[in-house]
Length: 156
Image (cartoon, rainbow, N blue to C red; front, top):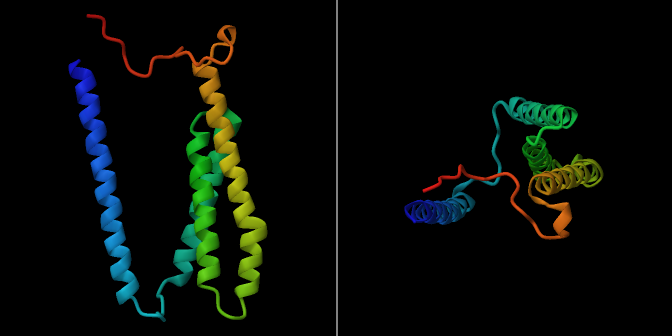
C-alpha cells in the first residue's frame, strides 16, 4: 500500500512539474515573440548548423548501431533522429532567404520530413516488437500478459 501511494505521489509530482514547465514555456514564448527583433545577425551561424548536422549524424549512427545489435535503445535513437530532422527542416524553411526558400522547402518536403516519418515508423515498430516480445502470451491470444516484471516483486 505504501509503495502504491509513493508511486502515485511521484506521478502527481511529475504531472505537476510537466504542466508547470509547459505553462512557463508558454509565457517565455509569448515574451520572446514580443521582444525578439525581426532581423538579427547571428555570429557562429556556421557552427550552429554544423552542430545540428553533427547531432543528426550521431543519432543516425546510434540508430544504425542499435538496429545492428538489436538493442531496444533503437527507439530512443530513432525518435531523437526524427526530432532533429524535423527541427532541421523547420529552421531550413524559416531562416531561408528569398533565393534559398524553394530549395529549403523542397529538401524539407522530399528528404527531411519523409526521413523523419520513416524513423518514427521504425521507432513504433521497434516499440511494438519489444512490447510483443516481453508482454504478449501467444497461448492466450490477444491478451497482454506481463512476462517480465516492471518492478522488483516484494513478497510480504
